[in-house]
Length: 527
Image (tube, rainbow, N blue to C red):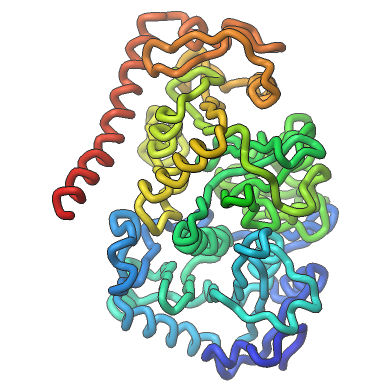
């Protein structure tokens, strides 16, 4: 049985999915919520949010991501980050997943990736979970209903969580597999219910396609001044550094919270929604995001809730620290209706420094910006992962290594070109610790972070000093921020201990960056 609206010339049967018990095409949010509840995929929460649990996997599985090795694309793929898969193994996996779906019902969503009509991608998502379809309907961009009649997919994402891959048969690492075939223009996902794999798969595809068109894809959030899309800023950062929180500043217009592209026309949001962390989410500090958790249709992942009232417990990390909610951009009052902005005047790189060494704000030269972009530094803290007993540095090139099908230098060159051509001012913002490392110091106050960012974006900074360890410039004064907080050395009770820790972090940066120098030299020698 078929329901919903679809281009009659492009049903899923034309893509090799035969024998389905039913196919629901492009159902809107209320029908998807109903379908999810009927299937027992979730519970109704306060306000009509859909409460779901992702089972064994509460985060991405980066080691289970594969790219099909093809002759045409092989020289350009970053194989150190992307495990290869043989073409015949991919097609066996696809055939087996299609066979697994026979006799089952499927949800199909035809969506756009990209707000710019000249750059957007037609993405079809085929999944057995109604709540995954709802998630994708939030996170990507929804074409008008009349556009569905002529929709032709450029790429297809097939997600069958109940299917378990066979490493021996399918050429993968485990029963969980995320496989991209750049030639077939398909992504296969199986063995995991974690919805974030869907959006990151699409982002990986855009990371492959856009550089070939001279466009920089970015794992970043973005906003602009009210009524002035030309006064834009982008915020790079790994998970947990504050991209979503800081870009959702009510005094500015939100373009998007996670994935963008920078073309000759300016900024484009890739997505149509947000995927925000909810652990310890505060209605005082983050009112707009907090309000979405009781909004009809918001997908709330792995959060504890009162059995009677379904009130959410924002302190409950019993399932995971990676509790999240997914909602459309229009749920944020100050969100851009277009998802577009001009060339950013400010490039902000966010880091959660658990060593307590970096200042809350530093101004970077273009060369320093490239260094920090390729470094992609943040730090894990004790307790977040088994075996982590002290702050542990994490370097993720371009602030998104797991989603880069090309080498980091390809994206670095595009960013360098964009900064040079458009004259963006570059900043490093520490949302981590001050007054000592994790366990001794304290978390940077979010009010101070907002204040230093507001001053930077408005041009309200005067005098700077040069940091002796890192070489960047640090403001001496910021309205509303204690001068002592601007100098991390002054916040430590032991200045000598600060100097030692700063030198240690500088060494970690240098050790990490050496890999680019070594790899570039090797490539030059082979050329």
